[in-house]
Image 1 (tube, rainbow, N blue to C red):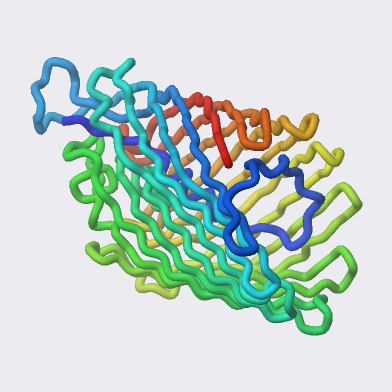
Image 2: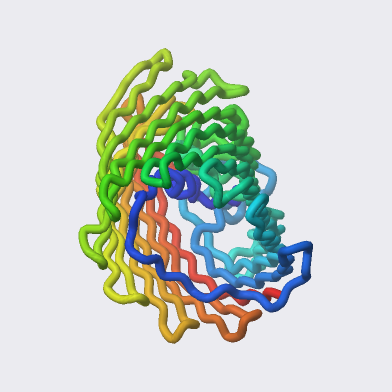
Amino acid sequence: MKQPATFWGGLGALALLALGGTASAQAIAAPETGGNGIKVGSGRLHPYFDLETRLDSGVGYFTPAGIPEPDSTPVSAKLSSDVALRFRPGFRLDIPSPKLAFNLNANLDYVMYTGLVTKNSSAASRMEGAADLIARINPDAPLSLEVSDQFARSDRTRTAAVGVGVLSLFNEARARALWRPGGGAVELVPSVAYAVEFFQPLSSVSPIGCAESVCDPTAVERFDYGNLRVGAEGRWRFLPKTAVVLDTHLDVRSYFNDSTPSASLLRALVGVAGLVSPKVAVTGKAGWGQNFGSTGGGTFLGQLEGTYLYSPTLSFKAGYLRMLEPVAAYGFFTDNRAYGEARALFGGKLTARVGLALDFLSFDGGRSDTVVGANIGPEYQFTPWLTGAAGYMLGLRSSSVDGGGLNYTRHEGYARLSVTY
């Protein structure tokens, strides 16, 4: 039986953990792409289409040659490679307004494995998609409200514990208010969000050597969950370019089909963010995370991040983050993350980016993982409606739990053309 695993679940979850600073050096961004679009009220609708080809060394684990299918024999311990084509039609709707600003970006993404390298990989072909909606009420007023929703159907699950190939259906609805009393020196941002994630197995067999439940694709649906997050952020600019910041969040996680202990994680961090010089921005936070669930447990939390604006077209960012998050099968885990990024803009059309991340994950119960991620590549705007991009992505994971599903190296090289009206 074929198992089209992709095994970037941990990286997808970890990318959501980083907390942004309240002050930073000037950001570097490429020009907006797209033609005139279609007029919708005071805004514009921009249809687009992405065509991407990707050489992927981690398409999945497949039954060894010579074994008839279907068969209950464990699949190969080595990841298989193949060439994939991705067809991604979508649209972007932007409606600016001082009373109700509206932004929507949605797409369908058909992933087609060609079988050029691995004969039977076409079974891994699937439909994915994503949508992001943000509506801002009175965005420029001292008191504003933001309502948003994020939807994704993808193999990049947000559950860091899962190592098998799974298809994730994720949706999170959010609401937050931004209150700036007294001219904006003080900002208070209460928020609430509710997320659900459902998993679908992409195989009925496990990789060789994996005996843990997180490696069994037939049981992955047990990790379906709902997560309620209530938070409050505060910011006081006691100097023109420096602020005291406060971040507090409470996550209440429950699982629909599993005996994983429910987690109630409270995290609070306080610190300072500001410009050390016109070119250097620093954010420093420290705090504590506590699990009020049945298993208990708490730990020190913190973040230190610096951004250096070498020039208006070249910037560097590096930092360290320690965070506590709920997770299936174990209840919660601690992530120690070191990360860095460099961005450059050449001639107003060519954007280059290098991103690196190293995560040390410690799960409640003793399991520990190491995750390495890299993303390198340029993007070039040929015309206002045509953009090209190419790059390389590395995903490497090793775990104290044996099994191919949790220990792998994945290389991806891609080239993409985007047409936007």
